Image (cartoon, rainbow, N blue to C red):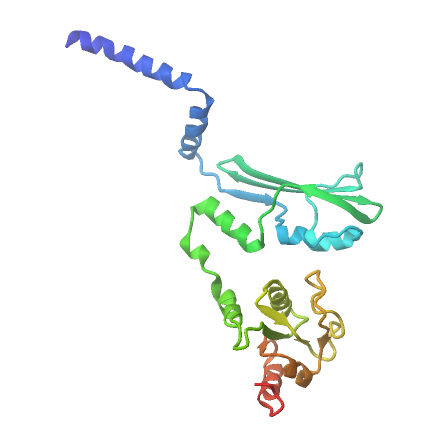
Length: 257
C-alpha cells in the first residue's frame, strides 16, 4: 500500500505528458470548453449578409448605384482602390472566428466588370436557418415553411388540365406585391399572367419582374377587369377599398371563375 501511494504522482505525471504530447488538435478541441467557463461572450454575426440570389442579380455593365442596391453598402472601400468593393462576413463564437466569407466586385469606371468570392447561402431564409443552427443547434421549428409559404402552396397545385396556375397579384408596386411576383416567377408550377396596381402608381406600364431583376413579359396594369379575365387566382395585399373592388370584379359575370 505504501509503494502504491508513491506511484500515484508518477502515474499522474505520465498521463499529463501524454495529454500534452497529443498535439494542438487536442488543445483546440478543449480550449473552447475552458473559455466557456470564463466571461460569457455572445455569438457575433457581423459584416455583409450576402446570398446567392443577390449575387445572381448582378450583371456586367451595371452602375455602382445598381450594385449597391442589390448587395448593399460594402464593408470595405478604399480611396486607393476605387475600382474594387469588398463585402466581408464573419461569425464569431466565444471571441473566436469560426466562419468567414469574402466577396469582391470590380469596376471599370462606373460600370461593373466582374466579381468573385466564396460560395454564399442560397437565400436569406437559408442564411437565417444556418445562423440559428450555429447559435442554438438544429431547431425543428426552423424547418417550418411558415404561413406565407403555406399560403403560396395553396396555389401551386396544377389545375384539372395539367397546366400551371395563372396567378395575378394586386398591389404590384408594394413590398408584398413584389415578393409575390418574385415567388411566382421562381416557381415552375405558377405562371404570372397579370399584375395590378392603382392608376397613379409609377409601376403601371413597367415590366412586373423589373424589381426582381428579370423580365416577366407582363406589364403592371390598373385595368382590373382585363386582369381578372386572364387569371385563375387573384392574391390581394391592398387596402380594404381596393380589396372590395377586386372582389366585385371577381364575382362579376365576365369573370372566368
